[in-house]
Image 1: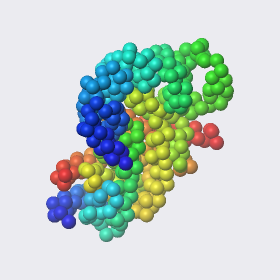
Image 2: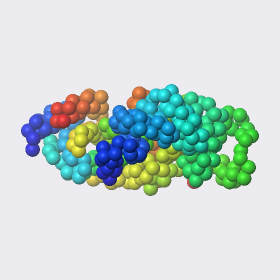
Image 3: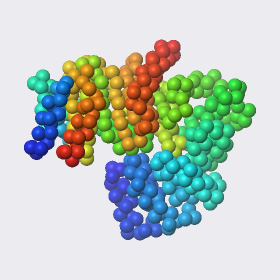
Image 4: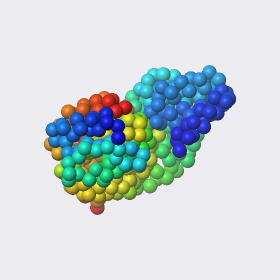
Length: 115
Length: 283
């Protein structure tokens, strides 16, 4: 695994409220690298996050909205953030009260680094 | 699949610069949001085929998607000078009229477009929506309803359908916003979704989002995250927000990209409340 990618994920995982940071291939939903709390199923998280992003991307393309750049899902016990570059998706799982603005900026910066 | 077709059309144009493959290519690139590439191919095609209405229409769609309504209008008007019954250009101009609030002009243009292709269901929906708007603004039935049109002869049924399509209209205001209520299979229950060319794309969007609620619920349970509450996707030209509604349904709101995310979230909350009340009343 690319050490720069692993280091980037480590920095993301150290942000307040983050429970998992992982990189996955969008086409098959497999995690390429992950830094996650022990109670997080990184494989399931990667599969779900990439599938959700893929479905949303198709819907946005059908509506003529162009490329999908960022996805946030709010759930009862956590928040999910997904961004992609090419076939690589970066995924963050956080506490429900994590700062969306801060994490959004961090993810965009990380995306530029790994791209 | 789409990538293969795009490469195929590009290859064909590279082999034969006079090929008409530029028209489907421009449209495919436009749908993918690759507007600059689409514009280049459209201009190149127009150089070869300046007297073909479809070439002007291809460029107009790209310009419209890029927000240049003035230039798009010029191209569609030019296309109509070449072919007065060119359906796509009538439709495009009708949509521009609708966007600027000129419902009477929109109705005239869309009716001409429908006359050119009566089998276009999306166009029928758009025309119906415009006529409903005209009726609302006149406070009475539109005087120029075409006789014998089944949509209007079955008044009660069409009123219920129109009510469903208009469910979110007063929430959305005049901005570039739209909202849909989709059932668990992605079928449209209420709202409308008309894209930048005036095409009704609600069914297509719904098909891609069908089953989303169930999938999200199942996956989030597996991840120990509880119920899903909302989702926000930022795309090149729009911000799209979704939330679950009763019975596995999904409410979706989309707004132009320059709309504040906070406002989109607020619209979503209001749309969800309205959809929940409407579903309760309709049950």
